[in-house]
Image (cartoon, rainbow, N blue to C red; front, side):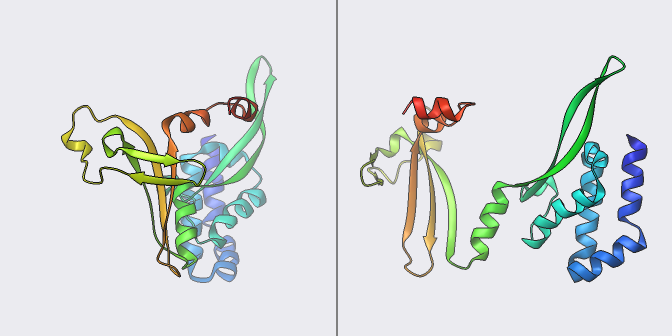
Length: 196
């Protein structure tokens, strides 16, 4: 495994690879290749993938101006493989990399549109005296001055996500109760649809 990682990193740092990506990504090539090399070091299973598949998967993030470094949470390259029993031992084979857009990547893409000036989220506590109208998808906060940090009995009742539309300056708010959030933690989409 260590040899696979080292050989992949050596290939990534080769002059041929550097020249190729300099033509494709221009000034972003060094940071892309450095990130790819680091990614393989952090996740050795990626060294088992086809190099062409790996670079094209990572390029999806580069085209969107997102980093594949897991610490940044913008985009991930995840190795998926099949387990086979070979000589009595389970071995991962046929590993393929897959692109996964991260939470921070979604926010960055939304902000890059120029249509959103502010995006965020927050916890709603019982002390906020929130009233949610599911018919019109409206949330009214009865006690906006409530500070959960000064209340040792602060109880979470839900979450809000919001953004401000640049054109209209309107704040768009979406509220989900704790119960609704827990509903989506079910492992099966079938379970979620049955419990509505």
